[in-house]
Length: 111
Image (cartoon, rainbow, N blue to C red):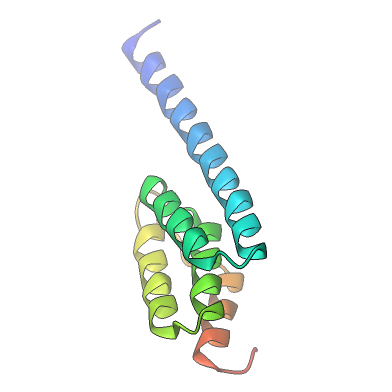
């Protein structure tokens, strides 16, 4: 196996691990939210984002936890981190779901 093939395989493996970690973090985080352990869920989502800065669904859950605990400024900061995270790698904009959450947190009516 050549160097190029090994790098491609390693890149694919890393991507799969990041996707798995994101899903696992999201599932565990939702369970924590369900028990009212919002601070634990926030810590988990934050750690997941450190591992995969493009895991938009983790930013969404983080924003929701901050909203649920009355921390709108921190929810807005999470949105701004989401924008920065999504700009890494293959740049993309936040999804309609993320934008909807931001409007809800700001108290703006949904569009």
